[in-house]
Each structure stands twice: as C-alpha cells, then as structure tokens.
Length: 362
Image (tube, rainbow, N blue to C red; front, side, top):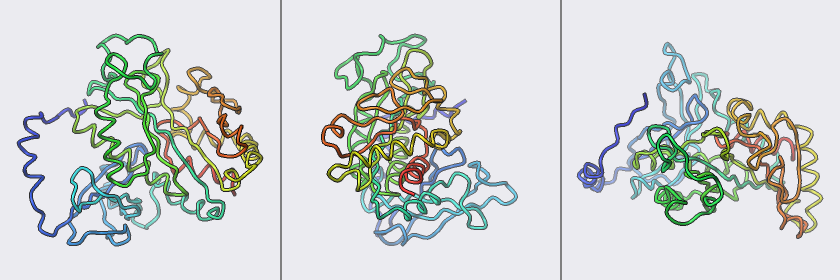
C-alpha cells in the first residue's frame, strides 16, 4: 500500500512559520538524483555555510544505495556528484537544488546514470549545436491511483473537449500546473509552456529549447519539482505512458530536435537527411525511448490515439500518426526542426537526446 500521510492544510499553516525563520548565513542544498528505477528521483539535504553559484562548488556526497535499488547492503555507499545547480522554489531565499550523477564505489556510473554517456556524445557533436525541446506529458492521479476528477469507478465523457480546455467539467488540476510552472521559472528551468492534454487529468509542459546536456538536466529537475508540488497537494503525477487502457490517449515525451544546419536557410534538406538516418535505426531508438527498452511503449504506440505503430517507422509533414513529424511551418519555411513522437512519458531524457545525436550527428 502506498504511503498516504498527507498533512492537512491547517497543519501546514501551523508549521509554515518555522520554514520562514532566519537561517543566519546557512544555506540548505537539496541533492537530487535518479534512483534505481530510472524513473523516479530521490533527494536529501545538506547545510553549507555559503551560497553556491555553481554545482562544482559543492562536495560529492553519498547515500545508501541498497535502499534505492542501486547497491547491495554489504557494499551500499553510492556517491552523488553535483552537476547542475538551480534555485529552490520550495524553500526560497538562498537555498538551492542540485542535480547529481550517481557513481558506485569504484566511481563508475551506476546503471541508471545515463547522463555520463550522454555528456560524451554531446561533447563530440557540440560544433553542430544540437537543440532539444521535450514535451513532457503526465497524468494527475488521486492517491488511490485513479485519475484526478474522474468519477470513482466510472469514466468522464469521451475525449474531445479536454485538449487545451477551459472551464469546469473540462479541466482538472490547473492549480497544480500553475504552481509547477511558476516553480520552474523561479528555479531557472527552461520551461517553455504548458497545456491541458487530450485525456482529462492529463497535462503537458515543454522544456527547451536547450542545447546539449542541458535538456536532460532541466527536464529531470522539472520532474522533481512536479513530484514535490504534487506531494504537497496530496496527488500523484504519473509518467505511465498508458495509465488508463481503452479509448484514451497515452502519454509521451515528444522530442523536438535540430542542428544549426537544420535551422539555417534551406535547412529542410538537413532535416530530411536526419529523418532518413532515423529510419535506419528504428529498433535502437525504441529501446532507448523507455526505461524498459520498449515494453512500456508497447501499450502506447499502437497506431491509434495520435501514435505510430511501435514496429514500423514512418514520417510525414504535420502528421501526428507518424514516428517523425515535420511541422507544417518548417515545411513552408524550409528550415527548422523535426519532432520524434516515439519517446514515452517515462523516458530518460539523457537516453533520448543521446540516441538522437548518435544517429543524426555522429
């Protein structure tokens, strides 16, 4: 059974005065890392006596990897090395969030540290200036695991009025979405926008444009903040790519990608060349696009509900039923970017962006 110990609003207000006390020169730094699931974050806090301005100023720390699925109890220490620093919108003030890479006792990347090889790939193609923008879809659930606002044991009206919807009966959870949006802006995360999605209680936010490794760093920290805000609201943000079976849309993490050649005048040729390269490595990308090498995406990529079939590569202009979509505006202007619609909502953005540059740039 999941833990459901949610503090009441009254209790929270009673305790809030303590979180507003002076810190007298001390700064709280919350270390955040990806756990053994490859899908969730863990965190712990360290006090420092200065305000860090770069992740490299913070010490490497450690945690009990046997409790996160990343080590055995007889050799349980896992190291976390700070790599990306953000302002902390939960605690405010000079307090910080820092994203970390996890390493084993030999200082080798743990299995779920996909950032290490992604950095190597991005360094090799930095002259091509790869830009990314990932559309992170998610579903808000009650603590019982049922979509927020849905009639218990039943279903809402069929899909149609909910996408980019407005008004009661059409949208649920906007207060959480707005809180998350503002928290990301405060933190310094490159959040580009948000919208209600096709299934009720399903939302999307976009991270980017980001160059190179920054996309994965910013998306992971935005996921962490979404989980923290939902924790306080007493709900769950699910990244399951098909949370409700049947005639309901799944959730993806469409990856928009371009190089400097694609963005320049007459860059459409470079875009089409990228699509051709992607068509030759479909199976590789499917394996890289969800944490279970395609098994999660099998439930979503069925050829229905604005998806392509998982077994077949396809591409087209303005076609949301394809593996790769070239936006209509890019086709008209003959430059821009391509959209890979295959990544699942629970993908690791480091794996997605690494796969993209290894296929298109290296």
